[in-house]
Image 1 (cartoon, rainbow, N blue to C red):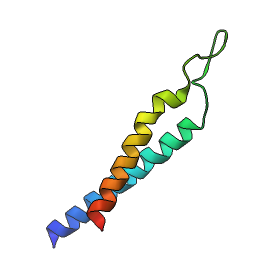
Image 2 (image 1 turned 90 degrees about the vertical axis):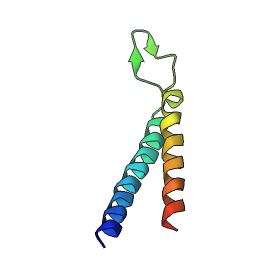
Image 3 (image 1 turned 90 degrees about the horizontal axis):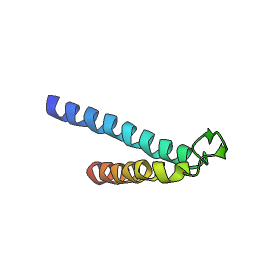
Length: 69
């Protein structure tokens, strides 16, 4: 029973982390441009920097659901 409890607790922690990554990617992608420079908005949109985190969150969620069901 200890092994099952430890596995379930690990999956729960991993799931919370992956959901956090997914929503962090969503929020940062919708935030627009990465700050303001001396001459206005930065030329690098923040969405390009946060897409990898969004993709990682999606894959972690899919992996979690694959193991849960």
